[in-house]
Image (spheres, one colour):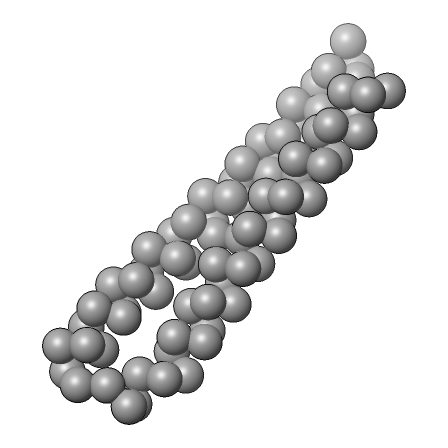
Amino acid sequence: MDAVFHIQQLQLKLLKSASVNENCAIDLLAILHRLSTEETRNVLGIIDLLVNEAEVLRGLSKDVTANHFFVLSH
């Protein structure tokens, strides 16, 4: 049962991290109009990285879930 709890905690951490990345990207988009062209390009690069990392973390969470169900079925 401890393994199941550990997997669920890991899933929750991954999803929270993905949400933080996504929220940071949204906040950065909201301030773009105040920046110079070069600063805007830099922020857009950061946003791309955050969105990509959020997608990676969601994928890891799905993998953890799949592994959890695989372990339970054996």
